[in-house]
Image 1: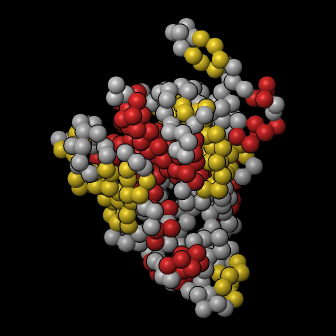
Image 2: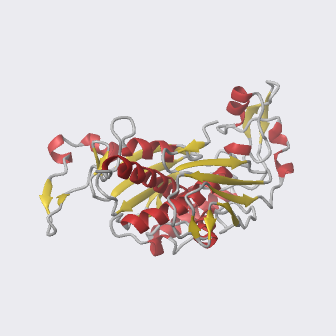
Image 3: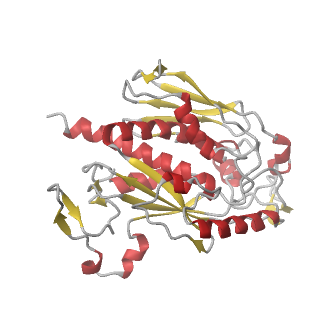
Length: 362
């Protein structure tokens, strides 16, 4: 089903939204990495439902259990299994959606592909699947920071037409986590929160953009030609639920410039390192990291499941209407931030191991 991601640092997520639990198996993690349930829990707490009044009110603690691969606080080099049990599922909220397809959701396409689907909470198509990604991403972050000092920070850049002014080169995690919408521009964050509140009360939803920066990424990561670093980053974040667009560096705005305007000229810094004057490449050139900050953006659509009445069809092919019940985010952006960070960390960690395996042998 395509539930496995990565090459050397490889993860497989499992579980359904309203099943016994969800989790991940991580294979290829180096041994002797210091990791604890608390390290993973910090990231899961940023992703979990019910953390504020602008996200889904589903009450899940999302407590992480390490089942294998760790002893005395250190990884063993063997497969790591992580589990989070579901405790607050309300499957009865989905009774109507068992026979009525939600517009723009995965209901109809899952039926078209498999001929069967888990309609309770959306099954594997639920964003609850991302628990495994975020848990694995916490370990990937630890490896990246321990080996190379890499720092990965995501934040809400835009919600609908409200865009915050954020410098990706200086933004801090403390600034991101200082408000419930995770936008470091506090004035804009207040307006974002108000807009989400209004939208939620009306039974509708809105989307936006998460920006993410990875700092201190070593030069040389990326495997041309088909596994270019930005290509793998694009696949990673575009596999997230509700993602609809990807940009890196100048992105689509770069198409408005000439080559002379867009090129990042080189210079030698005080340490004798090759650097670029600008960073329109977003830290990657020719599919390989160049040592500058990697800056990318991910567009997320409005949540598909809304309480407003919409036209749809039944599983029997009859036209009808649906006003969905249940507990859903009026805006996925605040909880999507740690998901984007996790996918970026998984890609960078995998490519770090691949680079050392190929290029650091001799």
